[in-house]
Length: 337
Image (cartoon, rainbow, N blue to C red; front, side):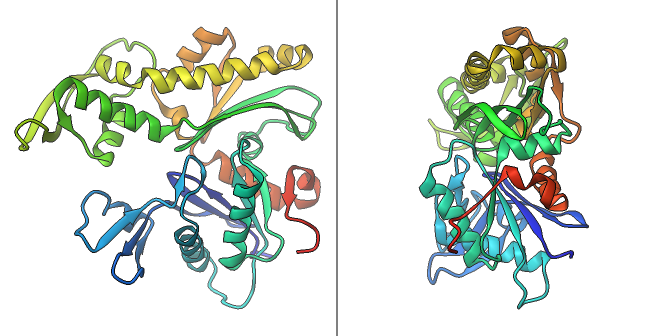
């Protein structure tokens, strides 16, 4: 009974939900590998601490890029590690549901299923589209004949979807997410201050100073990095206004994806969304002022899900708990497997 699991295989974090127990694991999707013999040295939180700090013979890799598997072998090892961590019994194969972005190709989907099956899942591995999982996790009535709009901003992709009667009516998947925001900050600081920042520092700056809409009180903070001119460490002072400018391009891309989806939505469903509002989920929903910015651009009410970071994992777990009722939203691989 407690063996079935749902995996939100994200670009930034992987969450595992076990049936009857809820979310039991939430770790960064990072693997540290020895470049001498390809051994896995650390996975998850331990490996993330190594990013940008490794000697030559260790590589800290992120096996997923833009929501899809970039390194199949490493991804499979990471999945196997997480499954074993959660699931002690060696010989039993758990039934597994895995989340994928809605804009994924057939080949990419197959890669996810094979990685899960190689890592020890029972065949067939089930697939659920991320916006559908996020909508279920946010508590939207996906089976009802009303329009529900969800915007799931993850690490690698932003998924926008309008859902009605257990299916996706209109959707848009753009490969812009938290990573693009970090990258925007790195490029901006490099251009303006000739300062090189690491990935982790950029992420910390985004969390502390990032915003998508003017704040009542603009903040200032120090950032440390390496001066590209002298090659020495240097500290600069930056403000929330500058960081907002750095994030402008990816934020605009997210707003455009929402507008394009609204444009493709049938008028009846658009009227429902006008009433209930657009629901934001995913880590990107925590960016200050993003809801104001979207409200300003779309004229629609915006609601942030109760637990944006865990929405997708909770939703995919829900599809396990109520497997028969929600079977329609899952895909499995071809019947002969």
